[in-house]
Image (cartoon, rainbow, N blue to C red; front, side, top):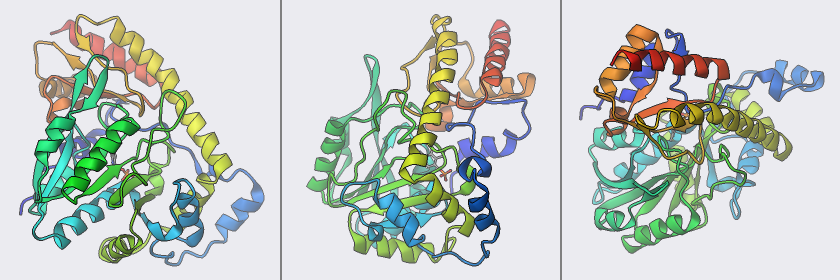
Length: 375
Ligand SMILES: Cc1ncc(COP(=O)(O)O)c(C=O)c1O
């Protein structure tokens, strides 16, 4: 089975370290180790850490800390992984491998396309259901989801908050998804990597606890500004299932990095966690104001729904050029990188990331203006 190219990751891998201005990140400017470990004593401890293998499913301390963030979870519900990417990979691989009579994944679109490509690459079928623009919101098409599931459905996927739209699914929508999954006895995979990166205060709701066949994936890469730790987790409602997934991680990366496990445990302690997500919210709000003002001055070109979370906006444009061509010209002529909607299966859209440096964002937008002038 041939793997489809993961277009968004490919364009980032090739160009993000070459261009002058990269507006493809969906998270915020990263923290440093010094931000996490400000006092000398803790730093000393860190320096003396012996670099052996770490506990393969994550140290008890880290799994306890993660479990503490979800009502009703215990450390045995948690498997620590190398980023959200490994969490999603193991989850899909396991479900398709262990359910020979269920090879369909009902997938929310638009979406981060990792599970999409993997499902197809592993011989499964993707059955899409859509988020649709309704008024000033992106809302899931619940009727569409009902007709996307059957006894062949291994899982329904949810990405909440959503990449690329930044939309948050509220509790009633999550409950509706859980009920539809229950009707066909399917799992729900809820990728909640942007939880904690909300524009307004209050955390977006988790799928955990809404149904007895829920798998949550998450990581420190977005809301916590720590993508370089490559530290993620899977939380399932059935401990037996967590154990099964753990045995799959024996075949991928064996264990999380020892330093990453330690630093993640520090980052997720309640006080530090609040401090980090507070910083994230500050960056997102500040930079959203810049991007929003720019879009609002160009409403004859762009139509957009404001993101509710994540440092990304997904506007639609009416320029006389496809998003793919536009992004290619911005890249080559203006050294500015953004993601074309085609990489999410949606032409005429663009995903603009705004979670990094404010001046670079302004500069990138004025280079975009220069390009618009030429069209
Ligand atoms: C929805 C979603 N899930 C998972 C990932 C992968 O995250 P990580 O960097 O933790 O592997 C991303 C990265 O952009 C994402 O947007």
